[in-house]
Amino acid sequence: MIVTLKGDITSEQYQSLIERIEDKGLVPWPDKGTSKTVVGIRGDTTKIEPDYFMADGVESVTRISTPYKLVSREFHPSDYVIDVSGVKIGNGYFAVIAGPCSVESEEQLFAAAKAVKEAGAQLFRGGAFKPRTSPYAFQGLGEEGLGLLVKARDRFGLPVVTEIMSEKQIGLFARYDIDMYQVGARNMQNFDLLKELGRVGKPVLLKRGGLEGTIENWLSAAEYIVSEGNPNVVLCERGVKGIETKAYRNTLDLNAVAAVKRLSYLPVIADPSHGTGNLSLIPDISLSSIAAGANGLLIEVHPDRRKALSDAHQQLSPEEFGRLMKEIPKFVRLRRKIEKLRKALG
Image (cartoon, rainbow, N blue to C red):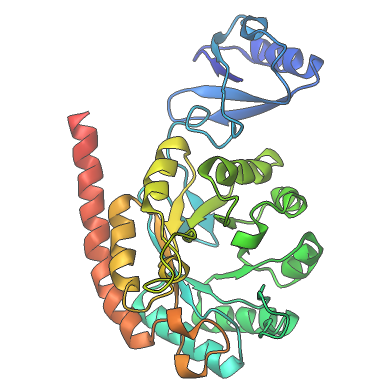
């Protein structure tokens, strides 16, 4: 349920409402919007009539039917902005996260960081821990990789984004002060991990999962994080398995980008590298993602993909990335103009 408060509610009336919620074993979740303050109610409210919470200072009580209540537009109508160590994403702020698939060496990582920084990326990505289908494939450098990411951040001034595999690694990530924790597609429904990330407070990049990655499940996964107290979630569409097997690796679902932006206030970005797995398609699909309303892009870039230890076929060269980055601002400006025109036309 969502309780919408009147503008002239007194502190005594507000406290009385909070006590009524807690008396039912429920948890109040206040949210101050730009025009109105609402209080979300966490817990099982199926046997409680909305009228129970109607009292002095309350404007209305609404029952939300979706399982993702705190991340829904019903709870928070306006777009949210996530701040990742000074880089903003959402509600007019667009960010490009770029870097290699895997952290392979200091030389490789520094070359990639220098290239993406010069091209205009705002955040640096790289996998210190790599979930791989084969146990014999390169698994990343682990903690050594985290250390290299921090060295690259300190040298080039780009906040870092890297994937966390389990809740056991949270202390390790905290020790290196990682700026943004990425939850990969395989872990979208790792609920123990999601709950722990909700208690950390660091920004989380939540990728859409595979066979279980329906929009409802994706937003419910975000709900796990937000309901534990961390509102700093960025959703990432990274492609779903389709019927095509040769022309591209996955199908980047731009329907989902547009749909989720209508269902949730959380920022949504797109990953055209995993979403296509095809170098020739990444530039066009990147720009298409912006047209669909994405608040950012996650793009893999390698200084010499011939030597890449993972996913060489989907990592742009610095030159290819630089050309794409020259096109991106034009599409971002065009998308903003379209959004302003829509608001003006009602």
